[in-house]
Image (cartoon, rainbow, N blue to C red; front, top):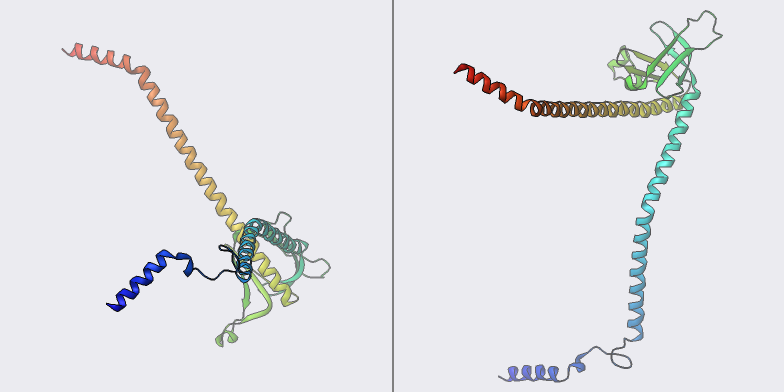
Length: 244
């Protein structure tokens, strides 16, 4: 009973003097101490700074993405320029290797090669492969007895695998080999994707055309039936009368 009486007394005192249990203030009631005010100011400044940083990041995000795309386009154009300038390589045939100049066509759609002039007795070689027809670009792997120990890339040699032919080249350096393989792989993929997109667009356009022609045929049929309905009913009545 004594504990209950004490608790009740404390509760009554809190209700009668609520301000006595408030945190310590410095100065008049309702004002924070200097430390508390400074802490609150730091919190507010930090919150505002975080929000400002978030807003700025959101505003700059499209600009950053645009800058990245521009940088990628510039780098791709530089790689394309290198391929269009061309390079001398060896075209590896079944019996002999012919020195040729390999280059990307001016429209960027085909890889071409032409024999280098000035080689006495060398057979003339030339060819072209559309990038969209290339299925694989990879290094030439070792064959023969060496393949029994595990096939390995032959230094400087790489190949284009198309639907109907395979062409092998030998570069002057490994750097040149890697550059041409990577750049042609990228361009070939873009050409293949563009071809698929064109095919999808053609099929979609064709379906729309067929649907439009079907609707037009339905409209014509309805118009004909409507214009001939009265005449048709008259002929039907006459036929029934003649049967009777």
